[in-house]
Image 1 (tube, rainbow, N blue to C red):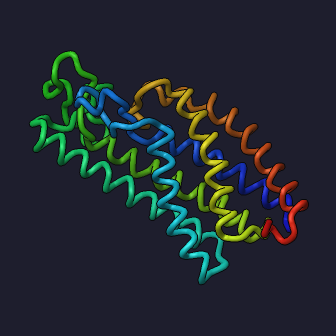
Image 2 (tube, rainbow, N blue to C red):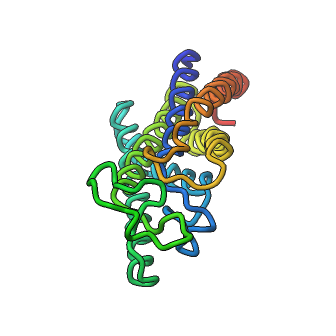
Length: 231
């Protein structure tokens, strides 16, 4: 067992999870009605969905390689593909189902494509759909979050000697509180890196650091108390 490496990768994974959650397009209930930009779900749900998909791909990669980077990248790609498909389907539903174009409600000009947003935004709404800047931010959020989740999985599997199932459950159990911290920090909806709420990120990162550190210590203790991590 490698206690230092366990704590290190759990902390790094937790911080990446918190960062990824702030990059994802969380639209909540308003997005379900097409009156807010993003995906119609909460921070925890969308982050956990991406993390679980990333863990599936990371676990598959871990069956034939001991490379930390390869496993982490597999998790990142899995989570990215999941969130990209979700954002694409959301745009299809909003565009062809509701007849509204994807447009940001937080900026007047797309920071990436420089396309105007304000003329296309429905009055009394906070944007709708998943515009270009939000889509790119969501991709980054899925990649970062999936990478962090896979790091934790690899640490629990190889350094704490947990079984694959225990490592997956443990990784998700660490992921959830970090996503909840991000949700409380965001307080509602967020579009991504260009959203004014993104400036609150440092507060969440400090809290995530403390929580992830405690989780890492608990993993080390659990590994010592169990026989080979199989209990």
